[in-house]
Image (cartoon, helix red, strand yellow):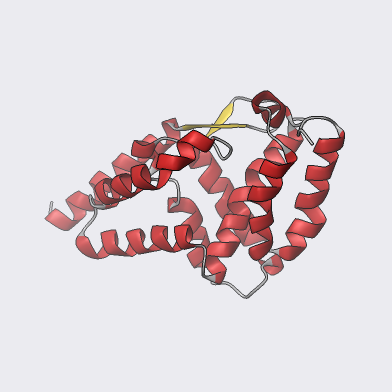
Length: 196
């Protein structure tokens, strides 16, 4: 087996570990906690289905790949809960080290490509990264809503926190923010699951 193929297969096996990284969000219908791989797959499919609602035209294959690889770094860095103020302070450094190690398993050209894609997602500047972030925010919001807001209630999440995160979704899709995200948040505040 040549060196290139060996490194590609090593990466493919390494990312299997993403299936073991549990998130705070539970599967719809009061199921178990979802894992990072399920989250990424769900986001990728949602981005394809909802692409017509992006604020700008996007390269949907680019968005889908971004969705699929954006949390690979959590194999080393762990999942940082969106509303964990302490964890967020060290998240970038942990994820940068993980990016170098995990994507570094690939041949140089593919490592550079996927690192650049990860960096693009994190920079939040391109139409594709903005839409991918909208999916990253919408997907757990939908699951939390489907579970009666239990995850928000469990963590004592406030409206300011949720709006702080979700307002960025409007940068990728104003329509989804107006028609889906904002109504869900308001409903969950009224139900007492998100603190006012």
